[in-house]
Length: 285
Length: 288
Image (cartoon, rainbow over all chains, first blue to last red; front, side, top):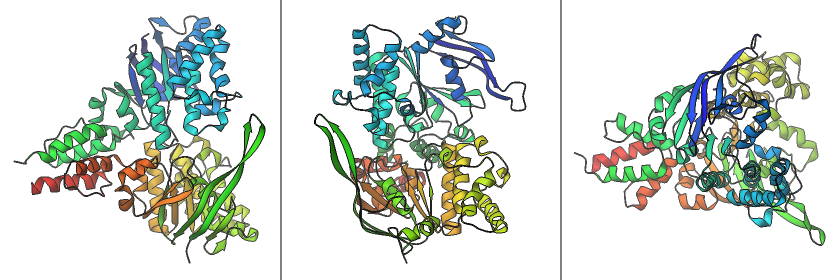
């Protein structure tokens, strides 16, 4: 399923003293199976954008096309849109409420009135994908660690078999171990299920590790759009927008400024190791 | 006198477990005989994965929790002495992760005045303290704004100002930047460093961010309720494998430098910042 956004504008509190243009003529296409990172500082419009994608808020102007069809054309179909485009909010663990992990994940598919066997298959497969072991299925979700809770909450969205999964800050507030577990789960679900993933994050390190393409939002507009290599070599521009590149990128920018011949598009630790090993082994001329 | 001194600090609680044979009790030790000393004016960082006991430790400093065994003194005051609770809380202020949970008033300056008002301080003195605290966190412009309209970083600075207005000697910050974007994180870290350097306030910072931890004078690593490592940031972060074993990260440049050393490159083991990394690499190029 492809998502196409045409000239999307959203104005909050239109006509009042608090009028604010949160999205300003945004056009964008996200292809089936893509893994996209969405970055931008607080207030840049990224949350407003993702809330449009599954029809929570309607556009002031412009349209969102899902496989060529405007999602607001038929209001009765919005429910279907929300199933196809799953959204895991920030701190999704606050939305856990059931007695057991299993029941919590089953809540979505049960409401979809799927046959019992299919609900069971969906729940088990979603929990497997996020790496929650069967021993935990009958536990209360509130007994789990922060990272586990969050993975259960994400499984609840996955159990509805969405074609697109949007994750808003999935690693915020977690420790390094919890963060790595979530990121691995996201990577796995993208690879195994082939679904489109949109990852909203402040962490450039996380984004750098995972995504195919990065959308940088600034002042309600798309400021940059490209592969991590293309985006992270613009360290100065990112900083002027209140963002940062992964720490290793700065090493290469600084070496370049000192006159050394180094590539500027290195942004992961693994790549930096290789490039710098070559760099120091080279006899300088 | 030490700002914070812990001797055999232990905290245990009973956890109820639902089993097939009814409810069973399990004793959990969140802190196990922790010994440590923090000097006045120090900037100390506490690291540890979730559930390691670091927040439990923080709550003891503020006398929110009382030790099961052992003793904790804040500027010589025993936290077990109920009569000293208010003096302890005024000496060691606390800032939590979520700024929305700590702001109580509808106007910024009223929020900051809340602490001193409760302490029964004279109005003129409260006014003076509020203005001073706002200036210290560089938020004077927002004195009459509503906290709800501020960014996360600004809210967190107001929470810090609220603690400052009580004139503490020490501030404990429990993951103050975890919910902030890069700009907010930078604002809060700069504020914390200024409080420490310019105002001489003792800082105890609990964090998961290693780039913040390297800015402290000293680092404690807590794992499973015990202090397992302590030292200057350079001493701690040069032990890459050990940190990873405790479920912690090292800064990206430290990880790359560690790899280069393993490959036989003669690079210092204690590289923590981009500048140090670039300096070391340039040095290598000059000598080869």
